[in-house]
Length: 205
Image (cartoon, rainbow, N blue to C red; front, side, top):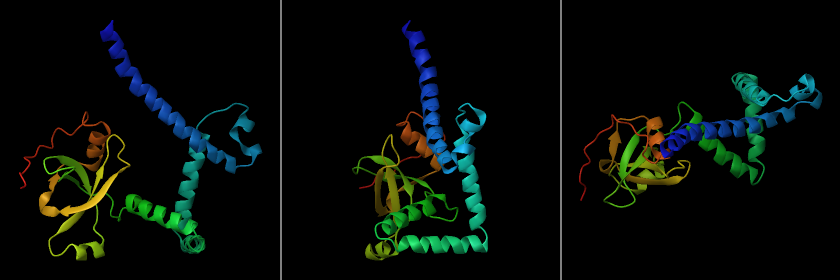
């Protein structure tokens, strides 16, 4: 009886959580339908509620925005809009911070997580997964001649939080695994890991 119960949980728990997350996301994206006049809402046109229309509208808005900004007129409009936001106190700080993060993570030419490293954290006898980031120029000048790298150490099981600091490049180990594989290992607390990444860890003094 216990074996069958456990097997059922192993099958149903991931499925239920996945459906719940999808339902939550679709419910949020369906709020974009509020941008349309009420007479245009699919619920009013069809007479029944079908979830997911907001997803289609959201994707359409994103594609249309990207298409618009790709031409000269759209770029000028974007520059004017960003200039307006930067003149508004408080809004300016929020917009600039969010834009810097989104440009870093979403831009193909940005300095997003590029490599997976092992670093000594939280103490000298422990190793933690970390992602290689960048070192600001003023920090590079302040730390002296020895080469330092910027690393982000995410927390488990929520990798959106973590610690950003600088370490000597010689005291890190570069892993031959993808960023996606490292994220899976972190979120699953090591249950899901990459089997092909085996490294001998050096002993630092």
